Amino acid sequence: MKKNLKFDAVEWALGDLVKISVSGTDGRRAEALGLVSSLFHNEKQIKIFPSVSVYNMRTGTIEEHYVEDLELISESNA
Image (cartoon, rainbow, N blue to C red):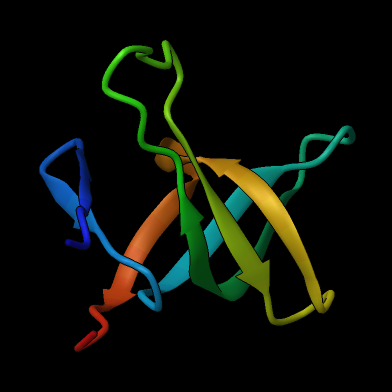
């Protein structure tokens, strides 16, 4: 059974299209689109700062991002 994670009233699922928005070391905002590639789910351990693995379409890499850096653009139908 696939479980979705719910943080900040957003229920994250694999394949969701998201906008990544992070601050660089120089203070400028960097934005890119990405796809949720994996979810952390462990009922015995709670993350203080929840994060999601996202495939960054601009860089072509999988990155770990805090959920406050992500904005849901389109939900997957999976």
